[in-house]
Length: 206
Image 1 (cartoon, rainbow, N blue to C red):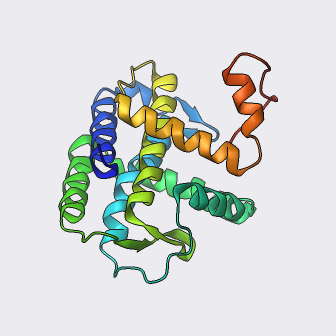
Image 2: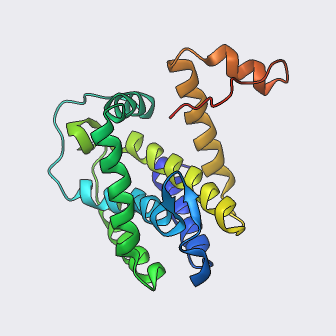
């Protein structure tokens, strides 16, 4: 299954979860300073940005060739307090954008994104936040990762089962493991996964 199909399945899974969120859930704590609404809005941006970036002209030279390199660059950018605050603000605004009936709104966005994806030539590269440029397929790997991780966050916050596709989970875990190696933590994670040693408190790859 290619990255486009995995992305679409991940997005469908998120929409199913989104449709089960009840009015009393929206202002519950989500993650960090986000409410469930803001967290859901941030998650929806994984679909919104695909449409947004595919509506732009194709990128020229690729500056980050893989999803792993993208996250390394984004992590460096997020070290700036102002950038971290901007990420938080975009999540809040996206939560407001969801409105009172979010599923149709996000579904319409997903349909437009799917139509754009269906018409892309092989090797398409896109320009994303911060002026980074990367292959479309690699960007879709990052969107699957975001949809999977934040669907789990929403599930934990609301008690609603995430119901994630197996291929999406596999994609997210593969990307996370690739990030640990890129960041020099491969041995630590391998030891933890094989029951030999715990990870340091607060460990994260993003």
